[in-house]
Amino acid sequence: MTTGQRPLSPHLQIYKPEFTSALSIFHRITGTGLALGTLLLVYWFFTLVGTGDAFVKMQIFWASGFGRVILFAWSYALFYHLCNGVRHLFWDVGIGFDVAAARRSATAVVLLSLLMTFGAWAWGLSLLGGS
Amino acid sequence: MSLRTDLAKVRGLGSAKEGSAHWWSQRVTAVALVPLIFWFVASIISLVGAQQAVVQAWVATPWVSVLLILLCIAMFHHLQLGMQVILEDYIHVEWLKIASVMIIKFLAVALLLASIFAILKVAFLG
Image (tube, rainbow over the protein chains, first blue to last red):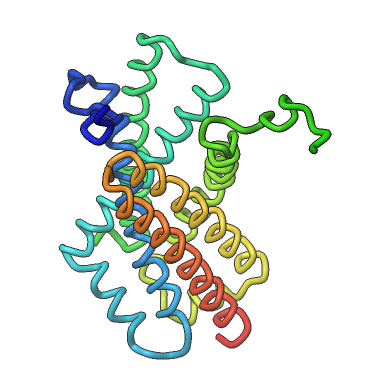
């Protein structure tokens, strides 16, 4: 019996992509992105130690156009993973399992995470005086 | 000869031989991270454009130091549990799967310790 050639889960290639399955994959993609982001977070903690210019250099980078694009993607990934994670917690206690409810909560996650991202940026930019 | 019954031997052990411990830890850390992340993001936004000394003073506030360390513990534990599942699902070469899961676990511990070290250094020495 050949056991080496058997297809292994999760059989991504045989499922028709759905709105809900796209969210599921995106949860893993954002999770992986956030995991990579922790490298920058740990580096930021170290720029706080002592009085070197690494802190100012990093601040200038985040204020640049490219820095802001990264920060925006990071903040959306964080809010998306948080909202969809809470959706998972509801499933874990048995709430919202049927297809219609899963589609509704999927829409809610997409909208709420966008709202939180724009809200966070509106607050942050207002503190900078709109620049 | 063991006096334990067959049922006692398998109770709590799923097919993966570890029961629901991994799943449960993922949920516990997720619940812990919800308020911690909201607090952290709100704090970071209110510190936008701040001088290094201001951020250092914030990190050095005792309850902030403690919350930051709690955040790092929950975050890196959650991170390595989640990445383990992803690596186990998509890497089908056995040695590579084991090696990458191990590397993620090593990295998570190293980055957690590095974070705690940096936070404490700022808290105690500035």
